[in-house]
Length: 101
Image 1 (tube, rainbow, N blue to C red):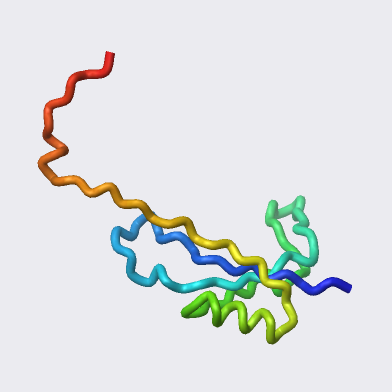
Image 2: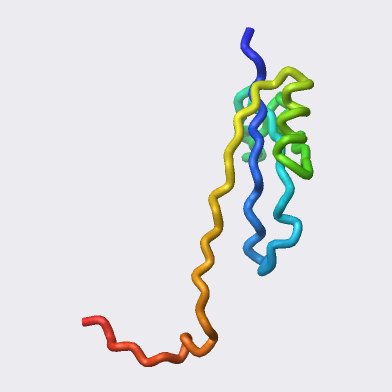
């Protein structure tokens, strides 16, 4: 039997959030074991797999990996993309530019 997979990633910041506060946490989610089923009467989607509701937060990637190893999960890590900031001045918003033709 293969080990259950645990997905470890750093969630993106909320679109309503302008700063980078609380964006250093790491999340561990378990893989789906049972398929999602559709309820034809209510239109809801459900599953018998309750482990999918579990989302654990860690302060570091190493702590999440250690937890997954301790529980016997196969850790699949998604590294975050590096944020590139293009510095510009406020005055650049009002510079005159030749229109593209």
